[in-house]
Image 1 (cartoon, one colour):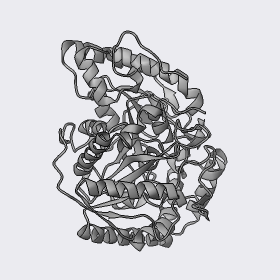
Image 2: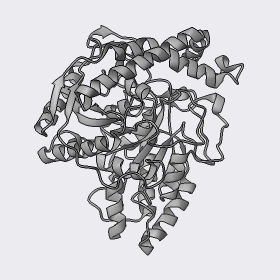
Image 3: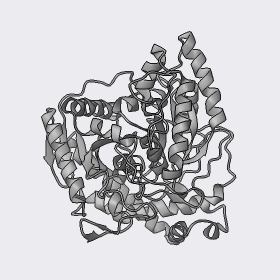
Length: 479
């Protein structure tokens, strides 16, 4: 497939390749209009949807109306924000007024919310163009993306493989050139792992950094947050300027200066297997941070992280599902087999076992407080595995060792249980596949993490390798 050429707009790259910042510059200079940018996006979508299956619903007419209104504002020199006229996709577990919000399940097949969830409302008020909804696994509880509603979503870097989950549709669309920004959720790594699998930047904010109202029923209480995925760290900053903070506009306009940091590097979780290529990328990232003036110490992760992964996560996630589905007496017969099994497990746990899981979470929070007394940040891989076959729920083996369904996901959920902000950064490639690393910080370090992300991006650009090198091949690598 070749890139679409658009003669009305003269830009350095096709309009569907441009990120948030580049689109704003093009609009401001009059080289491109939001209507032209949207048309380029829709044409690109027509090319790639059959291959990657990233979109669950497309609102072309609504997007056109929003783009036309944005074009009029830019013509008057009165854009509403840095996101005015920017095509944005929204994950299909985030309500958008008037669009189906099916959560990947036949149980929600006919659910059409009347109100936007609050981050979507902020995007609209900022002039963003809502392109549509991105595919998710059923009830967003799996680390790959396949559902009874939309089917299998595939990785633009290799359509035989998964982009991960549960934000698989969000990253597959963005990496294939659909949307300049993706709004997604992260309840156990669902932004960070897929971003790593597709060479993108993804941000999981800390607790209450992105306010949420008018959303779907809570599946993972206090663990799931909404955050952005983008092609650059700078674009994450622009997105947070709209959706972040207790009120619109409360997020800092510019990243704060960040002094040299003490970084703890976790290469394993209690000896868990990690793909050798992923480990090499993490080690290279550690060297890059050292070159930028930070201290990086390779240390063991607290045992409480593994205890949470093994003993608390299975209870919390499945009881959350049972809680959400208790209004459907026939739910087990109407969901897919994997969710039916999870539902049965969630219904079988006793109250004492849920209390035990909550005690493990409290132990994890104490352990992370100790971590941040000795270090400022934690560096790790985003995922222990490279992408695996698209229709498989998980890789059965990592580094030649058998693993369970969460073996690939050991590095991420601790941040959700403790409410910590965490940032996924592109960290090069293993063969033709992207790999990502994660920086996690203490409570309140959201802005500092994004500042460090931009520092990473500038450093990578200066040497001409890594994250910046990942951008052009995304358009795309087809078999």
